[in-house]
Image (cartoon, one colour):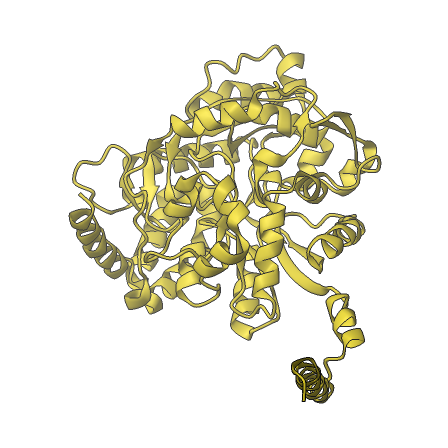
Length: 489
């Protein structure tokens, strides 16, 4: 047999064997091409914020884009601010199918939820499907959000330090010629609140809801639990913040304001102030700021908002972890979830659709990267900070062209808070943490909103916190903090 004939016979035999194998595997050419064009997978995404009327409408457009780009569609579920943590904890415990979930230091606690197994470790997923995130994100975010050396979530690329500000509805500032420049402390607000109370009976002078957390110069071990170290600490001693003179003074002032009618009577049970902000029937509140935040708030609300500082700008654990997306440990499609998060954090078209809705429906372009809201934006007004890379979002018409450069300067100038990088492992005090949280549910909102008299209720709360095991939790946290400091000199 000649060489050519032999080669042809061998090739024919090999082809026959391959065709039999492929047939047995159901892998014929036509089926293979159909496999690559199969129906996109649906990713279920839970995020925080007042549910918006047009979410499904916008996600339908988002899904057309993501289906073409990466073969996924998106089902977004929004849960209101005050309900988010509890509902996500229940869903996680029940093993409900979720792919992506918002988490942070202050809502659905990132560190504690990760340690309880709620999230997938994403180190490898980031390397394989999230290279754009790694390239785009300020390294301080990924480094600062590691838990025991691993990442369990993707921080939003946003302001790194946190600076508290007093915000004001400028319509009333102008109407009554109020001077906001001298406002810094809570007490310094009083004359302005008094003016509004006496002249605007339908307006909340001080817009406070159950999520209110008065600012005191302390760094919390766990956000919204009463364990903290002073910002100017030298000994790193953890104290019960409810016992500090600063907190006692603030709670007394809040109660004074409540009795004066400056604070909503139902503040301790109000989930959010979103409806009030929509109507503009408020004068002052407190918020965490960023460069040119007044422009963002003004565009969102449809009327001018101005602010003045209420604190220094410091980098806390909770500001590094202030807005994150995690992949659920129950996700059926973790690779696709990471592909979506990578696209969300690197693709301006997707990021702005998720943030601002549908072009020429909810907003219109006023330049290559400049937008202004249309009337329909009231049906899709999303919390920008919670949805990924803020620095991809379009500028408002009032923003300077160098806005994102100013953000980077703001981030570079941030000063580290004392507990930055320390993550308390609660595994030895889980029972006590649960009990302390129960006490917090009973007393916290009423105290922080000024609804009850701290002279009476603060002692009761502290007694209950003590009985629930707060001292034991603080002792364990102190032990870990001392070890961490020794290891990280």
